[in-house]
Image (tube, rainbow, N blue to C red; front, side):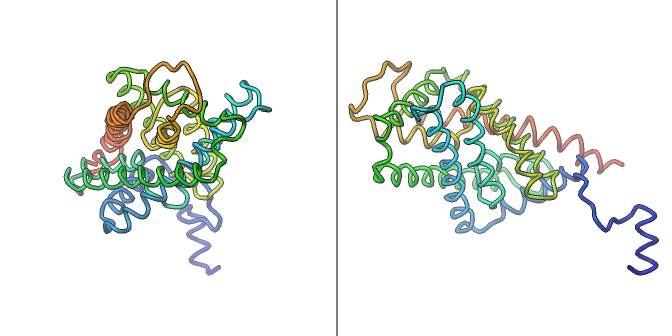
Length: 286
């Protein structure tokens, strides 16, 4: 190291080995920058990464479903571990750079800063949400035709339908509020992950907030898709359950609409916009 570099280190301006988490104001700048960057991706890139986002989130939902369905795993163990296995799918999507509708809601910070128009972020959210849906459908189709869907004496089907029916049993206002809570946890987890400098940091930061979503029965639209679509394609009389609501195309569509609306409010307003005013807008007047 040169004499000048040594002097800079002593002054605290740089570090030869700095693993400290980013400060909150720096996280806000990173989130703003990433949101603008993602929104300006060409359509083919947004669609492709959105498909991968739907696939990875569905992997986590499938893993969670396995925990709930396996006959040798107790209900208590599944209740504790299932949400953490669910979170792994989201972590895969985030670290691999896939696009997920719920976290892209943070690009509302770009709109608040005047760097993105409402049309631009709406276009991005619509494309990513549609791509997430297609990605989830792909995983459901592959899993269905693999024949594994009917293992454990149809326990996979029973569980998918039971979870889906419970999620669909809430009225529109309740569903929207559940969606708000869901994406507050998701986006708060992402905010923590953006503070990290290593894959380990990001994994740990995301794990508990994302796992809290299914554990507390909150919802985010992309995370529900695998269960919904699997329940729909197996709605052929293989099982006979007393469900709290019907699982149909229209009930699923209604749920995804109101949950997505809540996700936009939870992630876009209660996380992105609030932190924009605290850390980004404030600096313009310093």
